[in-house]
Length: 140
Image 1 (cartoon, one colour):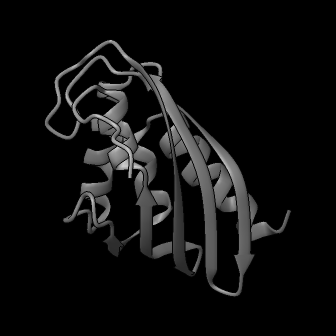
Image 2: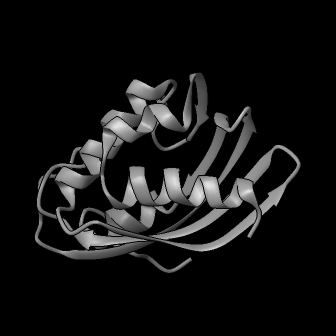
């Protein structure tokens, strides 16, 4: 594991997402952070990231996230992850259902000076809505 991977695992995965600590966001997200998430637009800047962390941990009090893969090259970090938890509070406009869910995602970040500057986040929002019972899975 190289230094950049270790830094991102510790700050982003452990301190921010696993611990659900919004105060840890400022240590890894640059003030000018820009997010590209087609399912949740408007996540630019550390304050938006903090709101997202808080929202997911409120919606899933037993929130767990794993780092399934990490790839680091030059100024890019790719993180493939799995998130799981029991849906107890509102998320994506859906009130708590009590259902246990597990979804996967892939996040690619551009870094400079040990800070995340830009991110492309793709996760299974459709799968989450299906697991919450909002949408039915239909054959193709």
